[in-house]
Length: 184
Image (cartoon, rainbow, N blue to C red; front, side):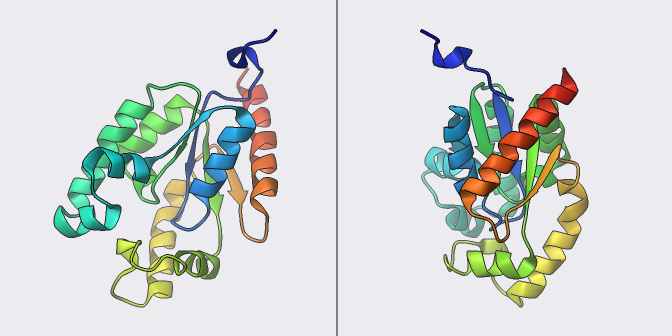
């Protein structure tokens, strides 16, 4: 009988990046199931370690403290195997995080339009500190434009808009196999 560890997979460590609201957490959970890997959502991981929600961290400790926590968590988690890691929207923007993640295994960037992103994040008001204040749609557009060149550095790119999570996961798995074949 084959062990789970012996089952062929296109990768044993995959990270998902992209702007908030593109589906990294939902897709990550389903991708991990499809690949028989563990799943970690980086934001939830940080929340469990600190005992604070992300909005509380931003409010009480500031964005810089949060980004440092992200950096420490990424450094720790890239040492793991059999993992799908869903990153926060700004995690991949940090050059050190990006270098570590790109070197570790395939990075998949998920994409959606600013309008779709805003529609999705509006379902959880108060949970997105970077969208508080100014016109949220304009803020999404501006941040997405700033981050797009960084997200483009990912190995694989998949649009989530207008697709069911299962379809997105199937597409990612196909792209991961192509990526794996290209590296062997």
